[in-house]
Length: 154
Ligand code: NI
Image 1: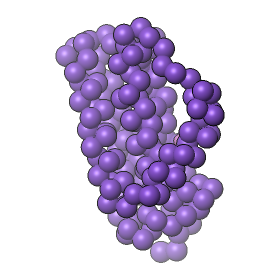
Image 2 (image 1 turned 30 degrees about the horizontal axis):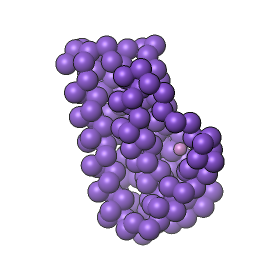
Image 3 (image 1 turned 45 degrees about the vertical axis):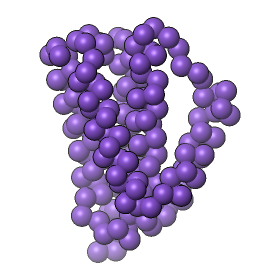
Image 4 (image 1 turned 180 degrees about the vertical axis):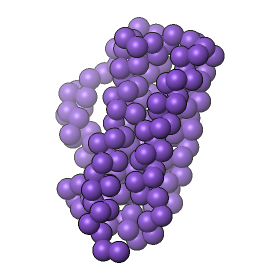
């Protein structure tokens, strides 16, 4: 492992911690409340974030190998993909969503660690895809949870 993954992992973990801090301490019932963003609950958001980490894990090996993953347009577009994934998430219990969150994130970190130095260099397609699916994605949802939480009754 080279030094580049260490900095990348620090960036990833800082964004991840900000996300987990945003809902830390909320009771389970609050995690299930809709309307954090549109009709999504925190649970829906976490399932969504996990879906995109899974997408990164699925497609990064091909991108690293120089290939091009299938476009979401072929599946009806990103919005349709997200809507299907949200429905899938709603069929899972909160406990399962949280377990998948932890397992998927751990797999992602392990995957990054396992790659040779330079794999995620600044201008690589692999870095761009990783950013879009993970530490560039979490903050949008972190901010939404924080804004919602400020208006929760104490
Ligand atoms: Ni999102």
